[in-house]
Amino acid sequence: MSRGARYTVLAVAVAIVLPTVGCDDDEDPQVGAGSDTASGQGDTPSGTVTVLAAASLTESFEELAGQLAREYPDLEVVFSFGPSSGLVEQVISGAPADVLATADPTTMDEAVAADVVDGEPVVFARNALTLAVPAGNPAGVTGLADLADDDLRVAVCEPQVPCGAAAERLLDAAGVTAAPDTLTTDVKEAASLVALGEADAALIYRTDAAAEGDDIETLDVPEADEIVNDYPVALLADAANPDGARAIAGAITGELGRSVLAEAGFLEP
Amino acid sequence: MSRPRRTDDLRVPAGLLIPALVGVAILVLPMLGLVLRAPWSDLPSILTSEAVLTALRLSLTTATAATLVALVCGVPVAWLLARTALPGRSLLRGVVTVPLVLPPVIGGVALLMVFGRRGVIGGWMDETFGVSLPFTTTAVVLAQVFVAMPFLIVAVEGALRTTDRRYEDVAATLGATSWTTFRRVTLPAVAPGVLAGAVLCWARALGEFGATVTFAGSLPGTTRTLPIEAYVAIGAGDSEVAIVLSLLMIVVSVAILVGLRDRWIGSSA
Image 1 (cartoon, helix red, strand yellow):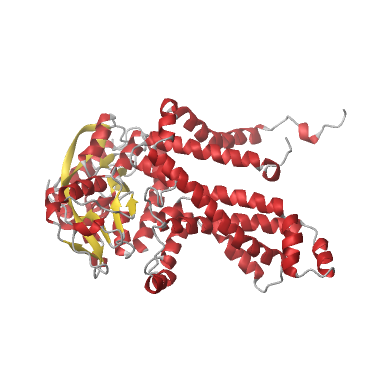
Image 2 (cartoon, each protein chain N blue to C red):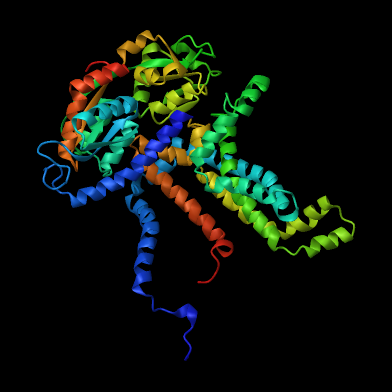
């Protein structure tokens, strides 16, 4: 419950904050120029920077923003986490944001093709799937083949979102035709269902399994080592705070990002 | 001639006219925008696609089932509220109408906590009968009943309060039991109110999203109703499908309002 509720609260908070960001921009054409705001000083990025990021990046990016606050005290980072495909759709529809980080290149390519990205996306991390079961594995799941069992409650991501696309490739590679009971719009939802014990098994990223802590156990899936998602990040063409965007993107691709992401279980790019 | 007729007064102060126009624009523009963005040439193929037809079929059957449940259980609740002197009746009315103002997704979380596998009732049902509700079509109906039945109860209670109780008194003095009186006198008298409540309940059930997706999940053919299909489509970057589904829901909503216009909007025009 706490995770789901927290996620909802976050989404609501973002929904409230996003329009505010838009208003600030209008009064602030030279964001980050240094002289127009009380907090601006020299090259230090300031103001608000909005980052749209894949749901699987939730814990890592919040941790990163927390650590970044020491370096850039005047920079406020606002996150909107969700399914990569949905985030790309939001950007194309004109959502006010500065940075986009997706969970696979396919979704980022859509943003690039729609011309909403500034420059080349940079891959900053990689992630692999795992077979997650509730603590104690009450249904006695032994491997991927069990996902075909109609009697098991199985959660898998929508095929259009990166974790679902990866799950499809993994199941193909293993020759398993899964019988999912629900298709979640992002990986966090699938992870929550396992943590709550409502799903017997789910294919989620290793990092999400780690983030759920003791509520989730993972089973070794040899085929999963071969199915790895690249995570690209890009500055957005319509960024209202390009300096802030460069600062946060630099932190994501830089040493700080590497260490935080590695801590969460992401693989090096 | 000398006295201005109140209903025909065209002198509207700007302080009222301008905000009123803004208000109307906020209500009308989104729907107009959908019509403008609609992929008219692809409309037939999207509307007849397997995914849309499956979701439509599921939505129609679940909303109808939910309305039947609401009729069987909701009319008696309305009768209790309108005709008896139960202690704590106002408390009961408050409890019954909470779902009207509760965010549906919260209702879904609550349903999951009660009827989920580790829920108070769900855990017992799972152990005793091996029955588990979440992620089933029954869960969709239950979520819809939770959210939509209050509309029926409120409508029927209103109708009961405005009918002339003397007919019931007469029936009683002629020897009819209270059950016969209810069936033969009360129910026919409030039939239009029951019908209006049922239609409103059905429409609300048809549009239910938050409680359904939280409690029942999203699987094509089993739990993925039209609104969930629209949400999944937009999350997957498939905005054309989302637009077509939205148009479909708007057409249904408008048809219902037109059907009920005398009852709900009045005929002042």
